[in-house]
Length: 307
Image (cartoon, rainbow, N blue to C red):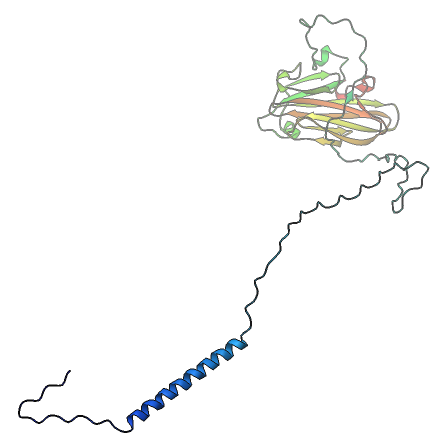
């Protein structure tokens, strides 16, 4: 703000007088500032003289080298077949040639041992007969005949009718026979139950009690086989030899027995349950024989009670 002019009649203001120490104070301040700037300049110059030079830029040289394929392994030398005269290679055991092994002889086991399949039964050659008529008109021979009409049939069979659900030949003990018939051989091979037993008017739920004798020419040991569908039991001189009882498909059982010289009383009790199949076969062979055969008819005879 500018100074105001004095009012008229007022005395004029006196000019302010400069203090004698003020110029001296300003000179000191200027000298201090100059000294500080000189010190700062000296410090900067000293720091720049000590600073390391800037690093030089690196120049990397990159070269591309193509990869070489790995070397192939050397081929193995060809294998040469060894000569028969050369010695065997080391660490290889020699295999000596073994002589053939003979199958050990197995003694017959006097127990029931059913095989997985029925053994073949080879029937003896039949006697010569007259030529049969044409197949279209041929009638199959009856397995069972009236005993009075067939004196050449040595096996006597009592026929029983059994109740449905029978499972054993023992059911015949509680019943009476309905008829008696005779047959020449127990050679009824497995067949459909609808074919039945020619000569009988039944094909299920019936039983047969068959008796006959076998005249042994000498003391001998024989393997006996009984095949049946369904159950059957064989006794010789009232001693049970084979028990193939129960309801089952055609299956054989074998037993080894010693038969004394003379007539031996054979008895076969057989029953047929529900349908599906029929079979009743009896055969024998020597222990060292191969196939079972039917008992020769020349050794068969009727039981004493039926003669």
